[in-house]
Image 1 (cartoon, rainbow, N blue to C red):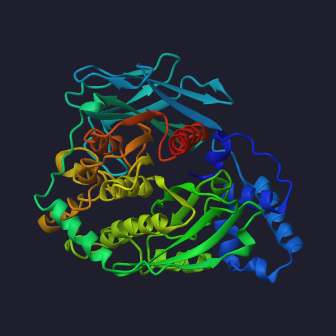
Image 2 (image 1 turned 135 degrees about the vertical axis):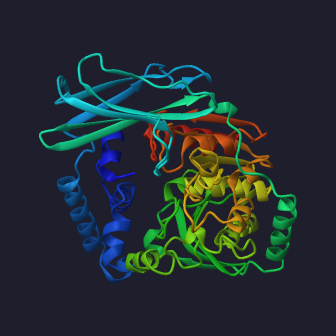
Image 3 (image 1 turned 90 degrees about the vertical axis):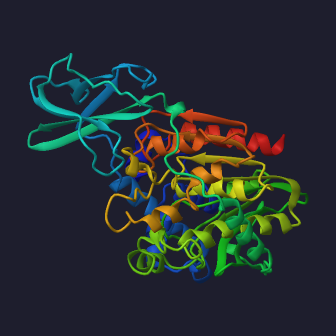
Length: 476
């Protein structure tokens, strides 16, 4: 989520009063990965005096306040379904109201264009209806009836003083009746059992490096290296300093290539917290290294070897998550009983995958899981991120078949861990038809928290709900 959008929707942050608070505050505002890591090696604090480090962070925060703008634009387009929960039965007709505000005052008399279409994700699909209307205080658009479980989107666009403004709302039709388009290969379980057997033959060989500059009076922080199939897994481990044994939380990442900082505050509350990267490279390098990999060698990694199930990129990633569980399970600080996995987007996918592959996971919490029902576009609806099977490069029988071994839907079928899930109808990165397709096949105890308005971001309240649920389960 962009910093501006986070600013508009998040609670006011408390002023940092110490080195540790300042570091935490800067991390919350996403300044460390962008600002410090891009220009300065992570061992910065080993080379700088603490006073200078605080000064640098303070300058970064001051820059944030000067440059960050709220995401709310001068002109706001509001599209609203006529059902308060944005949800309809199959065969019902959705109606969308369109309002345009400037300085919070309605604008009337301008022309507005609209289009109605099945949820396209961020791709293009066949438009069902489109037109132009003169805006007034009762501008409504009736959508064609939706005759199957799925999602329908209304997008409205207006031009004011030469600037174009646009927004959309997505109505859901019987979303809990959505069925997957992907299918389960007959050897799916055998394929992953074989992979886990291969992993089990490889010693964990953990290498822990203390990061003194990140430690606090309550938490020790380590950079961790583990042996995995086809390379390594790296991450950041945060453990309470106090004597005792604690529940464990595995944090699995969203898509991209970046450094990681660990969940220090989580460990201070009495959890063993392990945050992993998935690309087999250390997670404390200069930001420029990750930028170069993202633009070069790892660009579009999500479809690497999609025609070869034994070497598809996510094979070592999924098994690497199991290796991370192996590591947590081996720690003296772990209480040996309560373990959870959590993440969003790609991390939401990896949460479900990890819980499916490893029954040592007791709880999972996932936001908008990616890699779900990836074949959706082949069946007339949006498929999950990375929204493939829309071109000649991926629309090949062998790639479609391999995708089934990595589709989150097929892992969701065997999840036994109790789960907490959350996403929105407006998500155009992990479209709701794809996430419901995965959720609906989960037989384990579960709960879903839908925040209809959200796109590929979360409200602070969602994060608070997730933490309350997860922490409560682990400590009960």
